[in-house]
Image (tube, rainbow, N blue to C red):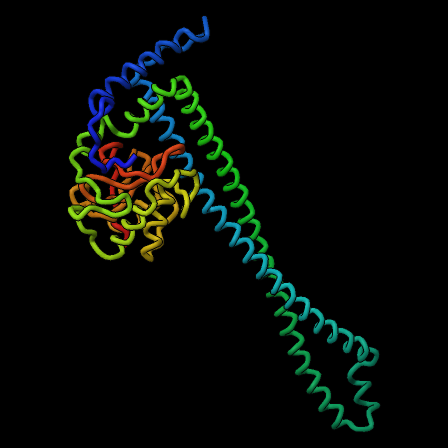
Length: 358
């Protein structure tokens, strides 16, 4: 599994392994052509099987990353909705208190409304006292007008909060629909890949896994890379990271070697590809976005020739896979379901770009 170790000499290594894998897969592909009678599918060559399965895995991972993004947006919309509802509840409570005060004003006015102001002045035994009370009543009237305006303002604010809450509800529903769609797509792609692999015997499946792990496209890079002193630490000859944070991210990635790929996982016991890079840099105190297509914009872009340990390396035209560069043309990444975090050459997949988290 660890592509960084110098492979031992055995009859199933190197070109011989790839030849054996090719013959085994060819045998399996030919056999499937005769299974199913008149409805049998056309025979597939080993290269076609590998290309088809790899494409299905890549499409599944792209859907999984979109699912991760929709999940993040859903959580944000839900938090915003809860905050808006809390604000509306507090303002409604304040509005009710203001209405109670207006009710007291209205009651007092009702009680004094039986006699007009001129008649009250004419009948009073103390006109000066009446005039003082009239002035006070005017002031109370001003306060009452202000209270009415305040109630109106609160009603408007509550209406705006409710409108914004409704918008968040619609956003939440849309994101939940996205979640379900991307989840279904990813599961369908993975199921299709498993059906293809189920055509193979255990021996043929092992041969395929050897080819898929990079023995064909990445053999030269893996063989020429320096052997690691430990599965958990980089070798002495590994290039140094740009700074202490990058070094910590790389160290975390080494510590994750062998842990399983689990769709949507961000550690510490399992990871998907962007979950691993996010967790590695989080251990260094740097917060990265959740998905591959947002992580590529987090930090400074670097060219392939400028790569340093700790940089994030991205693959495929849709930027659907990511690993953490460790030097010597290699990365640590979480490959796909059924696999584990491993070291692999970066030329194993179509390179899409790299970024150095800040």
